[in-house]
Length: 95
Image 1 (tube, rainbow, N blue to C red):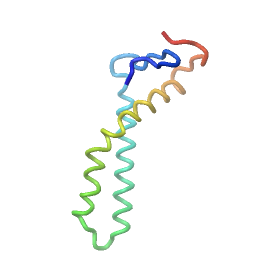
Image 2 (image 1 turned 90 degrees about the vertical axis):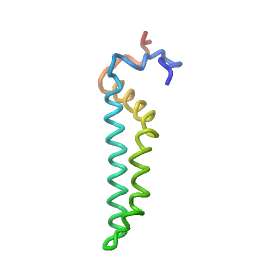
Image 3 (image 1 turned 60 degrees about the vertical axis):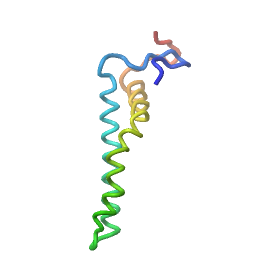
Image 4 (image 1 turned 120 degrees about the horizontal axis):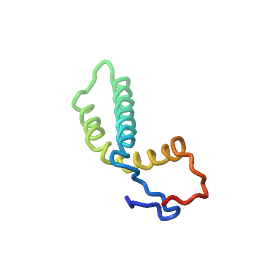
């Protein structure tokens, strides 16, 4: 990730720990995906739940989902920060 936006000059990381919100978004998104897939597979296979097949699907979601989604969660966090927390004039350049 570049330190500053090439279009507007916004410095992305405000202070140490700024992206803790991105981590929370990542956990919520991947945990929600895991839960939805888990429940859907359970509903589809009840009463004879194939445990090994469920694990084959669910373990990669739990292992690789956070890694794959993390850059997107950082983008979402910057958008949340800009939309709800900072309220700067859209024409103002940030140094």
